Length: 302
Image (cartoon, rainbow, N blue to C red; front, side, top):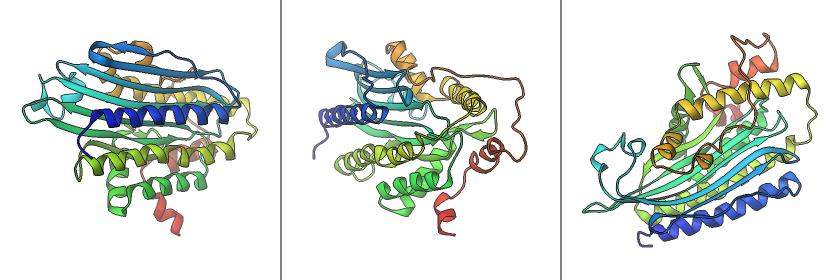
């Protein structure tokens, strides 16, 4: 397979359609809304958002293909030598905020950059992660088993899991955003065809990992106190997206439509001053036992 942003674009568009259809079915038939927005030089934005569903309070499945004269700073902070060159970028981003506190929030992002320097430079990036409010160990282990299977080797899984743990971390809180998954940047391992197949596999594995968890927990009865805890934890999610996430900064710096850039934010969130969960509670268990990096697959073998 030759280097082709068109092939990546078509894969991401197909994946968007598949995820939109699957989530609409999981929710019970609620439709996604959005319109196609063309941009400079043949670019395209396809925002798709589900709001106020039966089981999903909000989901956003966004596709973009953009062209520009120079990469935004958020895209070159690790590779300043690429500043000032024309580029193309295409991506798909998924965020799901369920209604039920026993169903975790989840996120996936896949992206491809082609920098049109004298010798073209290209790379993929992305991954997926899981953010539970009331975690179930079997769900967490299954999520990481799915991540391990798509990596093809334990060494690759360990590397990308560690990168995910490092990235999705709130340093001002001293805690992880969730229980992790996979994360990679500047990926061109094995050439274009190998990288394309790996990233395509990550995209295809996302629903394989998340859908069974959703189906197991979507009908769990919850209390007002549990919903309040979910809203508190959503506040931490918003903190990460607004203060730390490079994708949010990239979207703002590149001039993308702000409604699309901030579509990942939860529809409701709560902040309370110095809130501490009751010792021995399931809420405290989340903080102490789950929101710190650990080897979940080794745990499952014991």
